[in-house]
Image (cartoon, rainbow, N blue to C red; front, side, top):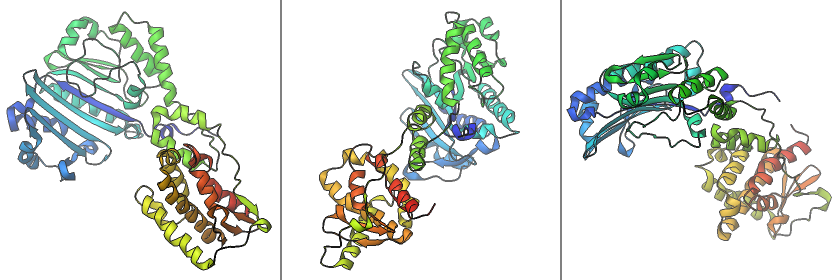
Length: 450
């Protein structure tokens, strides 16, 4: 199987952009607010604010006037905080925070969760990278910056040894890591030596107002995990930290880069949809080891069936009433339970099965359900699965008092959906090992359909 394209493999990665100052502009009320909004509105047009996030899920359209009117609502004790959703990139948002108390003043501006795919758009990579650099300059012209960075959120998450400051406003006392974009405040610059900082081997080294220095290791952030970019990061870090060894730093960076290197996805086709859901849920941080593990996984063969000639005839007093109970009470219980987490169950189609299996696997139904829950959910799963065999594959119900024996006749086989459902809920991995998806697909294959 061919490698997935880098954008497909890395689609969950984001770029986090954070700037900090030890001056709180909100101490100057609306004047300081306007300075902050000037900077925010200088972002690339697609990243400019479109909605203001308030409590109680209010998200009115962004405007300067509403921001001024809402300033008291953003303030609590010594703190001023607000969130702004970007206009054209809904996954991206601004978080602004300022405070002044006995410990001093602090301010942070962050633009978080910008999809990396946005920076990879052909023909716009350098323009969008330059836009973030321009914002650094714009804020530095208004406030003395104490620290700042922009880098892959996943790459930072892979750095197990780093106590990442997150939205901590206080500048670090030394350079621990080198990012795509780095801002060092005057205190750190003086501690490192201004001449040393200004001679850092990097794509761009620029003095900012108030004594801060900007270090850009590479023209754009998109290929931060490439050999060239990793070498640039390592050289810059070792230059500022002579106690570190270039070979050791590069080795660490190369190990992290493996997460961003696609490998073939060769999931068993009967459970590939379920595994794909879980892979995307876990995200890029855990993606590679997950793929390596489950490329080798194959579920047990479907065993919940009998030759049609061996299936016992119905032993219930009223066959139609039993079928109505299966397709009514039992199946409706499943719809009621899953209509929010798995909306596709309302369509009563085979496409809902991988989502049901994944939800049950993710929520560990097989190991967390009480006996009472299991007694309700098992018949519901079996009835829903049986309905699909009937209405999608032309099957015929064969009700039995013992639900494990109840079957749906499809061709020359009798399929046991309730027995499959019971196996599905046995153990943590039951929903994967005994998926409803594999069961239905096996029945469809043996009926002669693709």
